[in-house]
Image 1: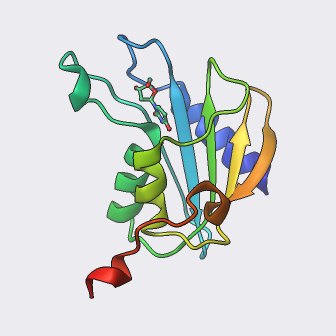
Image 2 (image 1 turned 90 degrees about the horizontal axis):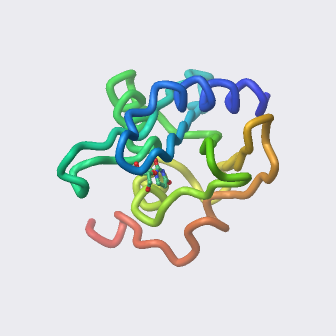
Length: 130
Ligand code: THU
């Protein structure tokens, strides 16, 4: 099951718009009811205005109906095992749980599986604001 999510992330990575960093990234996520959404990083000439692959995937996921996230896969062309940046960890955690699996991938498949709880320990939680 994790391999199909990796393939979705790798397909998304092929669409990356990363002319400045030349660092294509792809992400894919599966909801608890089985829907898959993916995204690539999108850079712009005003560098800070670009955004990550995980963020694009989250946009598709919200527009596709949202729900809870069960699994996430991330892949980068130039890394053997990419981990989501700090900002994306917080964004993913918004819709995931501590048990949500994160598949860290290289070009051929999943190389390591971790949980969101491991990726973002002691994260800031929205319940604090209620
Ligand atoms: N990038 C992602 O898409 N996801 C991450 O988790 C880390 C970084 C992108 C942002 C930028 O387009 C490029 O990688 C180099 O930082």
